[in-house]
Length: 326
Ligand code: TYM
Image (cartoon, rainbow, N blue to C red):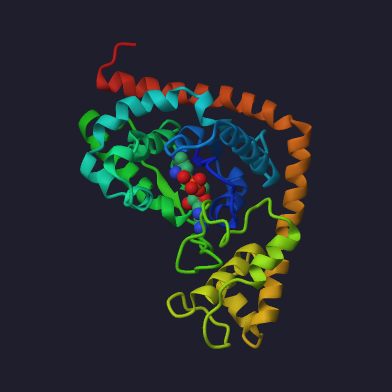
């Protein structure tokens, strides 16, 4: 049976990038195998975060998971910090990753290149080790993520090969599953930059009000000229909006390009906004109902129990392999 695993870090407000690149697709895997979806709260501690913000973000992500169509009967939804085996496996696996590899990670470089070594916490540097542990703890074969996380999964694969070469077939080789349309949604104000949780102007946040979403899309940076076609390099703004539209409609990019070929920028943006709202408004309604009902707390509790049962098996296998007596 195929195991599918992914997670989202509760560091800020979730964006349309998180939705299109990851969250939206999680439910599609429910028919393919056993799905584990977690809130990567330990990862959120790798950069300074206010405790109350972390708590609220974590609850929000649990509700977003459920609002996106994940069914707790089919998918194990849990908090990473509820399953101590993540930290235990990390304590073992970090010994099989090298400083040189970690220094090459784009995410680390992006987040820390302007920081002084004396201000960079060990956690952000060792991030890929915990992430590899998250994945390997469940024998996951598929890991649905946006493009920015692929490098971490490649490193996880290197780790598996290294570890298995030494100890035999102990760890399962995972593969990144990147969506065809929308693996890298760009900022609306600077379409050469990724849309990220820390970019309030260029972002659409999943909790933004209808009028705010519309306004952000209508004022998205476009490119010179007036034609609408896909060209990431020369038309990054238009290409990003075309991608967002295709992803929301669940259609091929070529169909979106064909649809808009005689449009003017203004009408084009209006339809993109309509497509985003058509999906996000009902999603927001479901999110609010779930949040108010408080039912997500029960889901997390049951999920953690189930996750621990699975995780225990792999942890034991790894401990035995490396020679830990327990
Ligand atoms: P995080 O929380 O930064 O992002 C969650 C998911 O959203 C995707 N994503 C995007 N996709 C398209 N366009 C964008 N602009 C965009 N921004 C973000 C990310 O690729 C990701 O899939 N390290 C992970 C969390 C994590 C994890 C794991 C994921 C921890 N352990 C194990 C998978 C498996 C992260 O920080 O994602």
